Length: 541
Image 1 (spheres, one colour):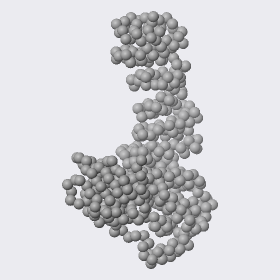
Image 2 (cartoon, one colour):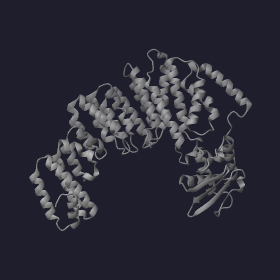
Image 3 (spheres, one colour):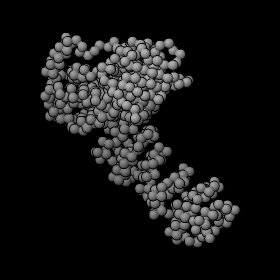
Image 4 (cartoon, one colour):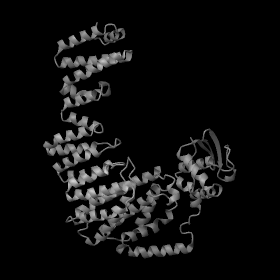
């Protein structure tokens, strides 16, 4: 087992400083590319500050690094001095330590960054500003809250973005929170989460130099973001008492403006995850704004605000986010046709995340709007194009709608058929649950499925309720196995013939069974191996 020598903060700062001193910026960038391409192999640490590795670059180059004597590090490539292979190994090491590889790749800029609160006068001015802001928080704007949070989290700016960073930043903010009313306190806690979410999602070093690196979330940063999202969802499950505290409306509207801007700025290319600020924007409307809206004015105002941003959008994903947000407003206004039209426009690549589409369904189910729910299911189903997503929630919404409004069942089958093959699993499951065995079997035969594609338990509902449908399914599979003409396929054919015998007996068609077996045995009499398997199965003497 490899020893795990932990790199402390002082050693990490020294590593960045050494990298900035001994490497030029181009070598660091090339080393970063080699690290991203996973060219570093057989990495090992023999002593706390010494490591070896092989780096693949047409051939394997051996790298040795001594962090205590950095100039003594070497690589057996032809480069003069410290090379991209050594840089790649350093970044592999930083990544293994849970440190920011992007920070090391930008060592030239990183080493020159100002250290937080390094000057005693800076400490004094920061302390004074914190004291001043703390007294202003109860009457402050959202922007001032974020300024306050930035000062509280500043000592952590140069630490790794991971769950520990998020926890420490959250503690610093919450410990300094002055007494607030219930609604203001809930808003402040929401913004503490949003502030940290924004810090986690942005590169450690903003600007063009970082943009060229293809920055993406690291593993531990992604964990911290996921935990924050869970906390935000839980926080917004609690109602916001605006009727008791109407004075908090300006902060709520400023929160809406903040989330609108962030939603339109973020990327939408994460096929497995709903865009983060889009999720928060949706939650704000569903959990806090709509329950407190006493007219349509709020929705119409938001539509106008969204339209005013349209001319400022440049990226296609921003356009999609805008269409999705406008669709939400029409949904809340009850204009479903306008909402559907916008959703169809937004469904082009990179597409809408399934959770964003399903978020329209949950409120309808909760309010018991079953006919409207069925209509939304029919419209949104064909837009669910991600094969990585489990459609179980979508199927459950259909079952609820059909249970309350049985006349919507034909619409369900039509929609699921249009969604094939994406809807295959839920389509098959619902066909069996509704006793539509003939349609289930027709689909399997049309798909080229064989009994071997199913567990015995999968076919038990048909054996119990519609055994006659399995006869052509099994017969077809037996003939396919025989055509393969090998011992393994003959054994599989005999197993199916035994299941056929049980079905014929259950259907009380003994004469047909005997006629089939006699004809089958006679037709394949020259296949000795098959005849042997039939005898082993005690099907023929």
